Image (cartoon, rainbow, N blue to C red; front, top):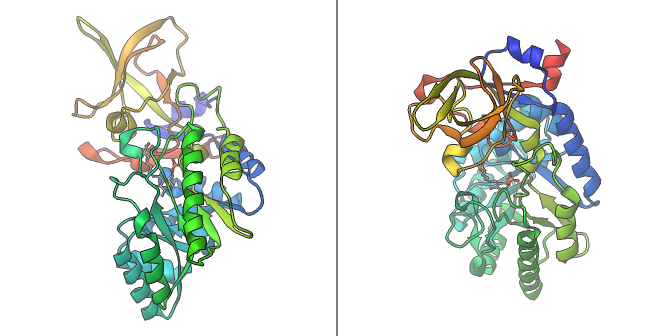
Length: 384
Ligand code: LLP
């Protein structure tokens, strides 16, 4: 990836930079790999930068929201209300009311009490809420424990053994219309076997549906496709065909059934970098610290999940040295990487923390009274 360094030098660091050309290519690659009858709902939780959202909306994708705030951000960015799916274990009344008011496509319902509340709130508005049941498929995903969601021990979804029971409840309720099933097994998944296991589990559940004479038009398999954090330049665009084909091959859809995907990370991950400036290089008896002006408040993934982000020194081509690259926050976990080899760093150098488009800017906080990082797109910088 190339960076507009002259422009970067005029900006206050740290900031997020989104390569909108790469984002557009990624969106095209997704479209090219999807068969008719498949729908993408971009998982907004990955990145809600307005310019990024607008581009994704323009590509014709729908969106996957988990809060009223996300629904509002999506409508502002130009997503159509009837392309919104709304998930989450704890939807507040105002969020449900907003979603009903706007006429979203579907609520992904995670419990019986939630289904009852949606029915009541829909009745009060004289509406019918379209719902899909989020079933916990109890399928493990080979990823970090904090980002697996499809196991019985996780808080998400409805247990498989309760599916028929909840379907019976949905049928009794007058203001909900059950239109589908929803699943999600976790994030940053690179082993297609996990998606194959999910497909097979869905097939079993669909046989149970056949057994009780229920046919549902929509199957939503969630998101979760991972990206290459180690070598983003080698794999700037994830292998979408391999991912989609896993479902096309292993999932037995019924006639006319529509398939929905909620990809987040794989859509925006590689197009974003966190740009930061080297403040000081400090040496002690055992190591060199490269202290930068971005911290865990700007990109929390390394501190929270032990995540690795490749770091490029954009302004040095001197011989490599080994550093712990750390931020300015008053926490020992404010470390981006330890023992990292990078061209010699000097005060004022600009570094890019790569593959930070997903769960980067959106998870930033103001801890230590720090301002939130800004976000710029390639378009913004090259058009001025
Ligand atoms: N659908 C549902 C129901 C989800 O819970 C998620 C992510 C997605 C879709 C999108 O998954 P993706 O395609 O992005 O993997 N903050 C963590 C990731 C949390 C993911 C939460 N759910 C991280 O930085 O790795």
